[in-house]
Length: 117
Picture 1 (cartoon, one colour):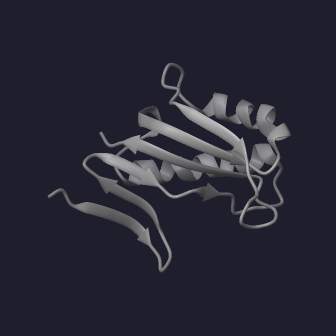
Picture 2: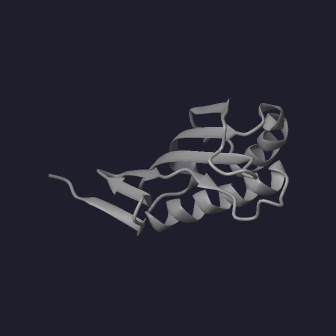
């Protein structure tokens, strides 16, 4: 039976779980809610990148991304930041939807599944 490795374990959730070489990240949200969608997107992508690296992956090995926006009209601005961040030729399957966020001020939440090296 393959083991499960967890990172940043809290009472409600872990930020990361790794099983059989697959990295699962919890939904990532910005810390600085005063930022616009570009700023929050950059913050969240930075968190995703750090968590993937900590678990033995990187942004070129993302298997799937799910993006939740509080306002779908922010998609173009969010895509500008995403497109500059994701390696060319390594774009993963992705879904982007509008959703009611858990906390007022969150503009974006990203859930990522990746492959470890």
